[in-house]
Length: 120
Image 1 (cartoon, rainbow, N blue to C red):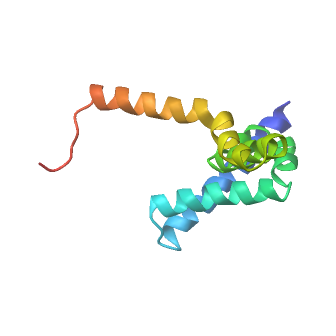
Image 2 (image 1 turned 120 degrees about the horizontal axis):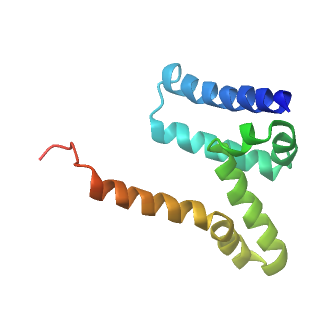
């Protein structure tokens, strides 16, 4: 069981290292880095490589933002098989709706609780 935790920690850490290198070496913005990592997860799932990666790394592969791209593609492909082109659009949101809804809700609550430090 300890080896599962260590593997997850190392894989998740390596994904974070890639993100940090994109910040520091490539001088990309957080938005660009986020998009690259989401697209990377999506492309890996499109080629059928992300599921074996999850089987190997567990939470180290499901917690980082690359997993969001995996979920979008996985949902779109599953629904496209059932409903055709319209399934591509509905499948993405069906699988990720709870995560998107949570982000909106908690962002709204944080905006109500904390004072903005923006310029007036």
